Image 1 (cartoon, rainbow, N blue to C red):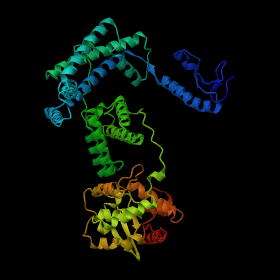
Image 2 (image 1 turned 90 degrees about the horizontal axis):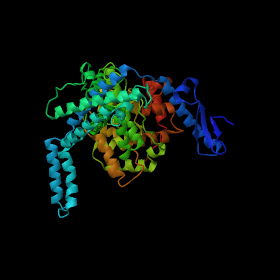
Image 3 (image 1 turned 180 degrees about the vertical axis):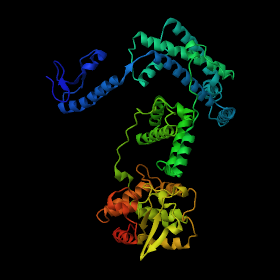
Image 4 (image 1 turned 90 degrees about the vertical axis):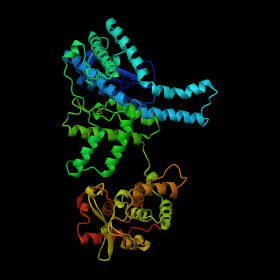
Length: 536
């Protein structure tokens, strides 16, 4: 007898199974009226949990089937031309990634140096051969690929003549899934699709041999490709997309993008283009992004890191699509259905400096000469502000209202000064900073930036990691998170949440968002801030 939550016991068994009736409009497609799957458990509560996942998958499959459409003659023509053009684009990317003379010479030199250093046992033939294989593969890369293509071309011609489909099924299946087509893999229509794709692949291989001779002007001989109109190859690069977004951001067009975000995006997309050996954004595919995702995870990247990099890739593709009015990806965004890794759950305590950590760090600053090492940790500890916001402070930002001292944290992208909230704020200067001598430092500083080094922020992080907490493994909070989280912990039960959010630059709503618009409000903020305790 069926029980709730789409589960029942299997016949003559205590094992539960998931079950779901097939909607009437899909019974002809699935050739079934009900779906069942063993849950492998006799525990009712566990079975309910497992069944929810399985049933959700079945329902998603139903939606997918309803969204599919019948295969048409136009699909045959489109599949062939699309495959032919995409393979030519792939070949161009491949040739751009072939080793240059300089790269070959560097590889040869490294091999010689390894032999001279005794890293290769020249008296052992197998060891010598093994060490030489990588260089030989690099040197002969094009010739080896030519042999592979020649074999593939002969095999494809034979399969087309014999009506076989083994070598081209991968492309047919990908086309069917991408266009949500309804087509049986054992049907004559499927064989016809494979036949057309194989002919497109044969024409593509012919072009590659012409290109090996330096001739890039070849045209197809196949009658179904002779009359086809091909879209001009889009050579837009990732950098061009990011640069245009940067230009628009500076002009105030659309959503503002922080300078730090642009730096991160450029770095991550540089790594992606080096991995894929192409800077052209229009040729990105879901399969390629999946391979990059899997490679990142296999190389030991945390799931959160891989998720962040794939998120950057999706964001830059979306920028390009908007900038091109949808012409960059005319058939839709290629990564729309890409599954991202699930970020690991982390304890916020792992991101927080303990009082012992904070005291050790603040004490360590006292014998440092560099202004950024001496004062930025103190500013961060007593404000929870981000390092990037503090490192751009100028002498003119420090001011006094009544008996209270403040400094301005400015959002001005044109001057390289940004805040995450995209708003300015005035932060009270804690008595601990005044007693430490911060105002004396500001008074003696020349007009302009208080911290003038081009790499001050990174040097600060390096110093904290490599010197202050040298030898420490495991949880090593970054200054941004370490002090921001500690500030929240220390203010708890003392400062109001509104004051805390304003000082740290967190987003908030209501009347609290107007803190700092008048001297009266500043005085009240300073009074509230006096409740914040001293760390040392």
